Amino acid sequence: MSRNWIYADNVDTDVIIPARYLNTKDSKELAMHCMEDIDKNFSKEVNEGDFIIAGENFGCGSSREHAPLAIKASGIKAVIAKSFARIFFRNAINIGLVIIENSEIQNDTEENDEIQINLEEGKIINKTKNKQYSFPPYPKEIQNLIQAGGLVNYTKTKI
Image 1: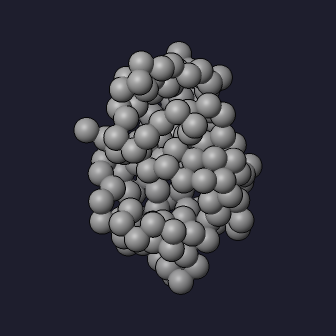
Image 2: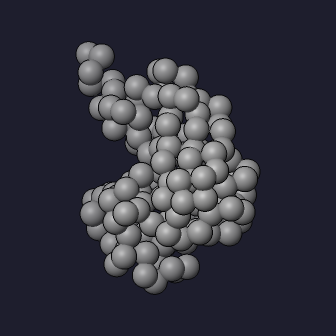
Image 3: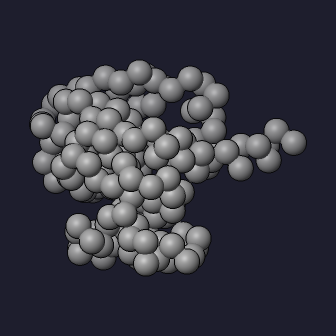
């Protein structure tokens, strides 16, 4: 069963992956230090398919691509937040990390609630609480890019 990692507003890239680890682009190394400055247990306890649910302005701060890389390499299935910093949003899409804007789910969701997402229909379902939330679905091209694992992989399929 997946777990929800719930964070407040303004989680910046410096706490997603601290600057002292920016000397590598190795995704496994980055995952080992993801969120460690605000959540010591994250990298030890995160599992493939978990979700991050956060407040406003997730990914603010510097424009480093390392932040979404660290999250994706940690096994996070999607980041759902009230809003995202624009450059983080773009970097996440470029590497194939699913990110969804929704202003309601953070207030209704607990750590062990079972969450499902449907990118094509723009739906998030909290099965534990029998609640459903909507978001504007990505255009098909962006869905294809995410399914390919990011912009580089997507581009390789087009060559």
